[in-house]
Image 1 (cartoon, rainbow, N blue to C red):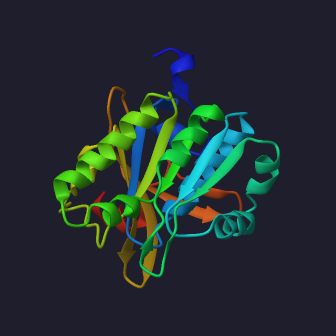
Image 2 (image 1 turned 45 degrees about the horizontal axis):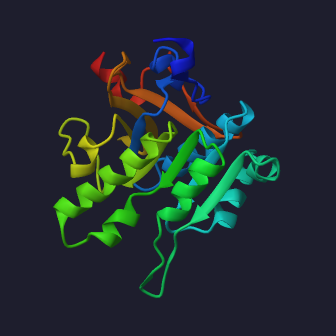
Length: 237
């Protein structure tokens, strides 16, 4: 692939796993149990893009934009600085008192008019609310949105929740098959300790490592330790 076709995520260790970066205009799903770092992953992807001069849009389906910005600030990621520069935009699709406040036209218009390069959809609960009674319409709704974003040449990163994630017996969900890329985040237990780990299940059209990597969360966000073996798996080697 040509360099112009590659998007650097900016997340330490992740571009190494992808042998340089990911294809532009791809759609990636980051999936995991609560507390595994999906929102931090999303924030950092957007923040690093803004640092490289790539406008980004954060679509939040349940949390307020102010909460996302506050959370980012606690990690040393000042989203408001780039928001003032016109490099980061927010779109809130919130659900209050069982009333659906849903509109995809607004974010799609922003993507087109602001020349957005990176889109975060946090998370897929938006489509679960819309199509809770029809799995086929749920899939069609996601595919329709993926197609609309792809037409703008923006790169999309979405998040989804899992009730559990056993790497020895993975149970895939319908949405896992709809995206170009699939990344799993999990917390693996060994004794009384837990360790956050990441694996890239798929990334269509490019080579990537399928190993399981430990990662940490601290000031600056996520750091993937590509030279380390997860301590929870050391006994197997």
